[in-house]
Length: 152
Image 1 (cartoon, rainbow, N blue to C red):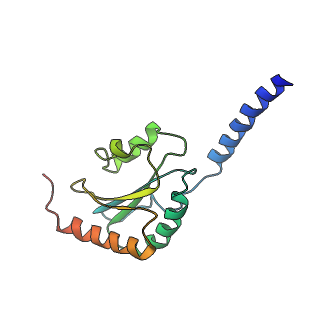
Image 2 (cartoon, rainbow, N blue to C red; image 1 turned 90 degrees about the horizontal axis):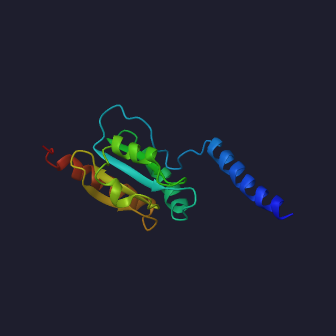
Image 3 (cartoon, rainbow, N blue to C red; image 1 turned 30 degrees about the vertical axis):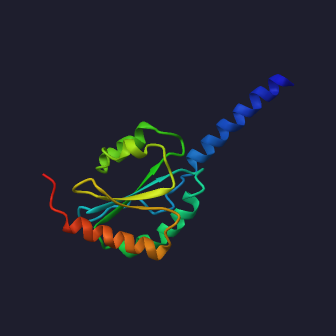
């Protein structure tokens, strides 16, 4: 009986992981859509399926994203559900977040608003932000990014 238990538990975990991976978990933030121009602000959500703060933050942010569809903001998600994978780091690097990523690697439950040109963090959205506060923070981040001198 002990051998059966030692086989069944790992098998159930493996099947669960495969089902989850194949379920096509999509970003609750609507992240990763393409812009028709270069973004000025990157809104990078650090998330995971097991993060309780993400379950509050992401639906709020998802309701705000359409308001910025015609603005130079790119919403991306760095998903740590399966750990700190090389793919997550590569995605961060591709989005211009190479300097920021190591400071927040593996942390979840927030969205960083980053000036694409300078790499500076303008704001950090958390569960403490209402939808209205998120809209205001994104508008401020755009204003800051547009006013910042170009990095050399």
